[in-house]
Image (cartoon, rainbow, N blue to C red; front, side, top):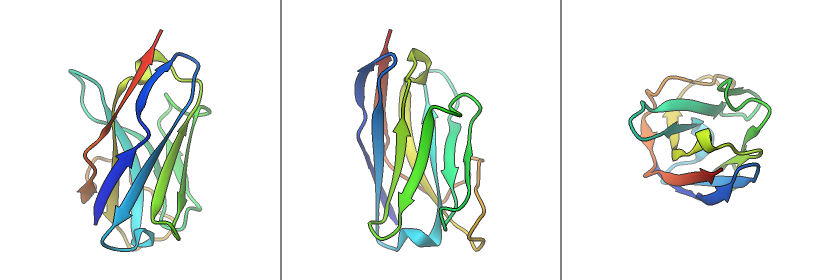
Length: 125
C-alpha cells in the first residue's frame, strides 16, 4: 500500500490543521493506521492510532484532547485533526499502516509495515 500525506503547513500557536493520508494499492480497511511525528534531533514518536474498524483509537498523552484521528474506509483516507496547536507540536508527521487481523486493535509502536513520506507541521509562537 502507498501512503501520501497532505495538509501540513505553518500555523500560529492555538491554531488548527487537518492532515490527510490517502492510501492506494489495497483497501485501507485491511490496516490499522497511525500517525507518528519526528522533531529535529528527536526519535519518531507515536501520536495517534485507529483500528481497522475505526472503533478504537489511542492517543499520546501530549495530544489527548487536542488531536482527533478518524478514517473513511470508503475513501481510503485517514485524518488527523489538530487543534490548539503548540510550538512543541512542530515536527514532520508521518502516516503509517500495518496489516493486522484484529479489527479493533491499535498499534502504538513504530513497527508499522508501510510509511508515507511525511508532511511538515510548523507551529509558531
